Length: 258
Ligand SMILES: [Zn+2]
Image (cartoon, rainbow, N blue to C red; front, side, top):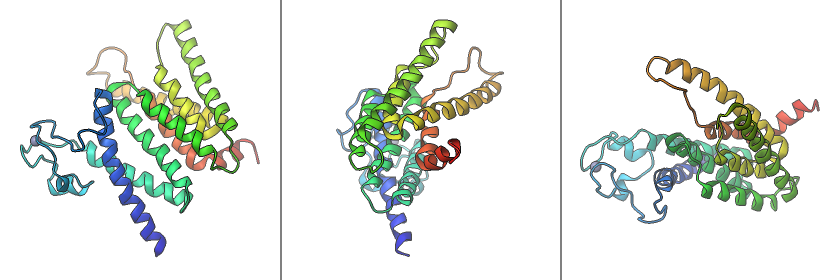
């Protein structure tokens, strides 16, 4: 009973952070301050969003997805990100319980959510987010029992180095710039959290999902779009790293035959 309440509290807390992530996703790639102004504005009419119209998920439902002032539609993206972050928080709590680990695991997932949507919108991954994740992962090592800062650094070098090498050879031998440096830096962040095995797992699974999605996407867009179908890689790395974050121990044991 008490646990159910805590899960609910962590979910609600997650939706509030999700509301902030919406601000980050919108403002950071546009070069605007994430902190100021504190209130959001309707992108259509420019009127400030009142606090009571800014309650995660609920306000969207009450307003039926339209701006109170000008009635122009509000993107479904906003409540979706809030819901997703709510679940991220609840699952982080289920993994860690009441412990300092919760904040680091949920922080990991929150950054990946912001990275995913910015990469989808702009095909970039802001350095600030990768750096924040790298530092958070490094601080986390001091709270972890069986994972030192050395393990984190090796993970960063393995992840970023391997992806950089792939990008280099791709460019060198095929003349295609398949990967951005944002993806490489993202692997430094993920490696700091997951170690070398987790980082390499993330690249392999991310590539696999990405290739599957790329083939599907190319097939679906065949008739309408000319040219090569291009998909951002960041969201697939993010998805794969989340799989490892939650099932890493099992995956590692299965792989190593333990
Ligand atoms: Zn409006």
